[in-house]
Length: 228
Image 1 (cartoon, one colour):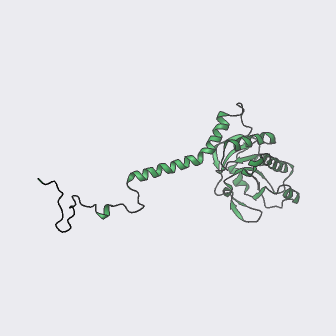
Image 2 (cartoon, rainbow, N blue to C red):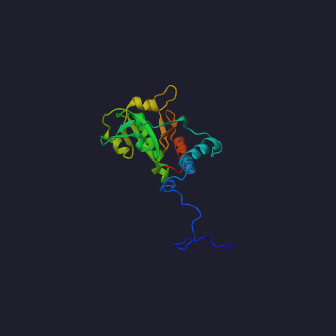
Image 3 (spheres, rainbow, N blue to C red):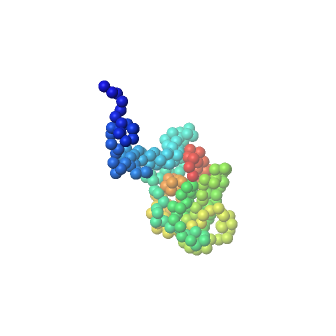
């Protein structure tokens, strides 16, 4: 019995033993090849989300659970649950142009709230925020000072000259108060707040604060988180 493959009488080439798949059954270029590809895509998106959120989660864990400084607690009060910057919170800059406060996401924000007249208590908070940021040395560029002004009044020249790096933004007091929590018996203008680079309000400092202790909290957060 011959063991040679059957050949086409015209071409002399071996005859195909199986038929080609119909063109309609072949995947188009770039088309996911079955349900497995979609499943892998979902896992990849989840992995990206975990990787992006991990630095802040680790910094919070190290700071509030492990407590790397010999078991001491933070000076500021951790805000729980998270309070993202409201997308509806629109502020007006010194150039008169409106913008969402959430557009400042990407760096750590130190926030104070006061009217434009800025009394002694207001000026003291601005001074504290400036000094706390400066004390971070090469890490200071990761921190932004924000003064949310609750009216459109003029800011004194002496304040503008003393704090040129502070973002002096006009904001609606009702919206700001709905977002920023206070201690019992205090008001929103009594506190300094901290927002993480993802735009989440994460810490509130007490009325008449100790700036050295705020500086310690900020330093530790910057150390344990590499984002922002």
